[in-house]
Picture 1 (spheres, rainbow, N blue to C red):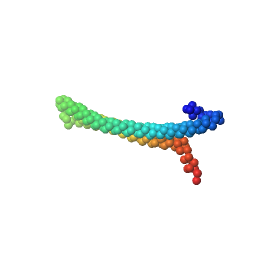
Picture 2: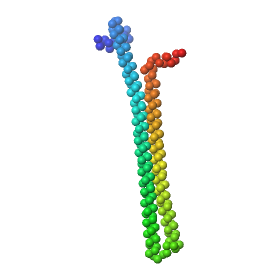
Picture 3: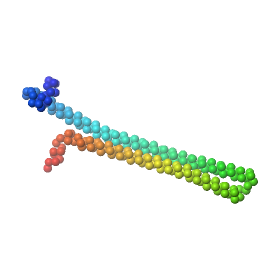
Length: 187
């Protein structure tokens, strides 16, 4: 009986076999059509769900990456401030040592030579501190931009997943709801 049911639609389509075989074939064909429609529906749901899941996962990964970049930016800001303090401290130590050497040589600290050396050292200290600060600010701006780009990629992936899922459902709509198009078109 199973063999007749399985081969019935084929024989019926070819015009081979008796009425019983054709009847069994029609019943088996209807069952197979229902099963095929169910599989088609399941496939569409899985495909659409997969597209949505991929979009959501990519969005979550982008949010995580964005948070990590923002943490790195904050750490860079702290490190930059510490580096600037250390650079200034090193220059202050060098200036103090220079004053000490000038005084030990018997040079007055208000002499033109001492004043020029002090002013030069102060300019160098300011430049070095600004260099460290600006390098840190540039790195922070770069990390902020990368975090914003990561969030944008996440939103784009989420939208892409939603549109892909919608496209999958719309492409499968004629097979899922065969009479839907006819009802929408007829007045």
